[in-house]
Image (cartoon, rainbow, N blue to C red; front, side, top):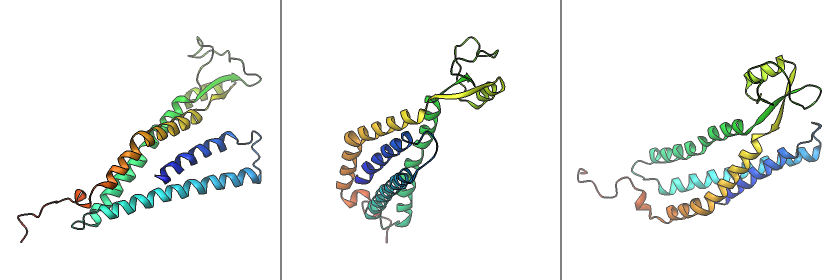
Amino acid sequence: MYGYLGRVLAAFMGQVLVWCFPKSGHINSVYFCFVILQNLFGSFMSTVQFVSLCAFHTRIADPAIGGTYMTTLNTLSNMGGQWPKIIVMFLIDKFTTARCVPVDDHSPLEISNPFEDKEFYNCYPSDNKKLCLSNGGQCKIFQDGYYFTNMACIVIGLVLYFTWTRRTAKHLQSLPIGAWRVNREKSSLSV
C-alpha cells in the first residue's frame, strides 16, 4: 500500500515538474536533478509495489499447479496495470484544446475553411492542424489536457485507495491460504 501511495505522490511530483519546465527551454542542472530524483522515486515506488504483489502471489500460489498459478496471477496483475494507459491517452487528447491563430497575434484567424462560422476552431487533430498551417496560421495550445487528466487520475487514485483498494487488499491478505487453493478438498479420483 505504501508503494501505491508513493506512485500517486510520484505522479503529482511529475505534474509539478512538467508545470515548472522552463519557458525558455533551457534546462539548468537543478531542474535536471529534480527530474532524475522524481524518476528514481517513481521507479522505486513501482518496484516496491511490484515486489509486494509478487510476494503475495508467491504466498498464495497453490503448490499443486505452482508456476502456472503464479504466472496467471502476475499476468492478470500486469494487464490490470496496462489497460488504463489507453484511457489516459484518450482523455489527454480530448481535454487538449488548440486554436488556429494568425502568426502575428493571438486573435482568431479569418480564413475560408469548413470552420469559418466559428470564432476559433480546434486545430489539435492533425488534419485541422495541417489546414491551419496551410492557411498561414499557427496552432496554439490553449489548454493542455495532460494537467487535467493527471490531476483527475491522482484524485481518483486517492479516492479509490481510501474507499476501496486499502480495505480490499487487507481483506484479501486476511484470507487463509486454503481459500486460494484451486482444489480445496481431496479429489475422489486421486489414488
